[in-house]
Image (cartoon, rainbow, N blue to C red; front, side):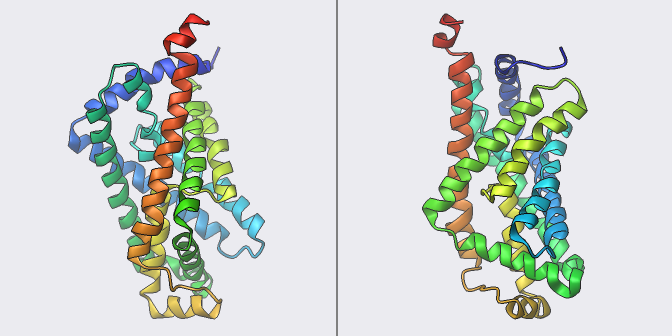
Length: 276
């Protein structure tokens, strides 16, 4: 069969998770930069495609059809994405990886994701790429960022949990396939669902919110956003970190690690093996 079973995926991931924790710090950072750029570019493409769609549901659908290619590229290229690295607890629970090793991976991968996302956001904002539709793309980018900064702390945590359950499901489904096409298809559907629902992904937000903040610095873009009735009072660097990135990251860790623990419990734990 050209397909691994859920139990086989979970078992196969153990060695992969161990390897991730043993990379030197420079490699974790470099692979994190690669993944961050891929996710940011997918976010930029989805915003560009959806910015002039008036119907909210249709705009979410358009974004959901485009953004998932980011995770597909990450999986195919072996890059390191923080939200996907939340599966490493599988290796820790098996006793093959250490908690310090996992935390080291999370730290350097998160840093790499953040740096690359910020750079892509700055590149789009200051190169003129946001000038589509006479600044309409810039206004849309500002609107998206402002909305994310206006979330309640608890709401952002919950939406982060829901998001990373789907992202980690996408990683698992991608790893079920034995060819590139199957892996891309496996990653696609769960990520499309989280985008359509508007759940919160910490790495994607490392692009979306800074992109809005950078766009707001351009007087023409700011005027276009104001003309369209976008409220930017809460769109600040402080709210980016405290009101969105922190709670969303917490939620992503809970959702991803929770998914990892369920898969380990069902397929690799002593209880699971005893009842096979």
